[in-house]
Length: 149
Ligand SMILES: CC(C)(COP(=O)(O)OP(=O)(O)OC[C@H]1O[C@@H](n2cnc3c(N)ncnc32)[C@H](O)[C@@H]1OP(=O)(O)O)[C@@H](O)C(=O)NCCC(=O)NCCS
Image (cartoon, rainbow, N blue to C red; front, side):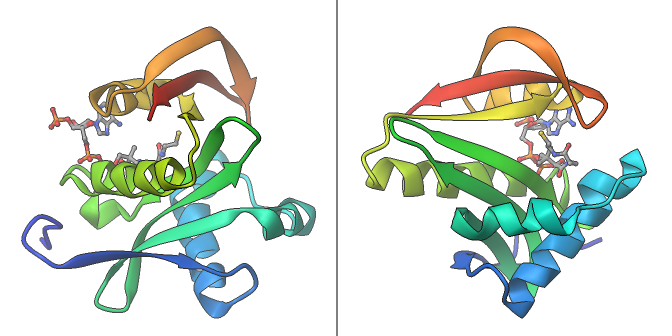
């Protein structure tokens, strides 16, 4: 099995509408939507034109992704997905670090996400704290979680 920890992983921002964007959407579809029996709609993806799309690369392969939406006084992190064969090896945490550094450099004081209930421990290990009541999104329970930068 390939391991993320012993290989050179790079992070970069990709533009909406490029072939790399299509690849990151395919990764999200596989990891986040297909297990729920759902697909991204054209309207949903159109709305992402103003978002910041981050990918982790191993050589030229996109192995993880996250989206950032810069708001007036915080930043929403969304669509966090790590390729199956690289899960549980620290890559998701490295991706968090990249997103947090990016937001901090823009002077944004905090970052938040809507965490699927079963991955709350992952975000807690990365310093996020639950905020408010649980709610339903895409048919599953979510919790809002925030980290001060
Ligand atoms: C959730 C996800 C992004 C985490 O990335 P990852 O690379 O697998 O996580 P890491 O290896 O960096 O894990 C960091 C810590 O969080 C814990 N963790 C990771 N995923 C977890 C999970 N599903 N449940 C509980 N703990 C988890 C790890 O055990 C690790 O703890 P440790 O430091 O004590 O060993 C990734 O597993 C994934 O894409 N999962 C499927 C999609 C998904 O649920 N995305 C989140 C939507 S809100």
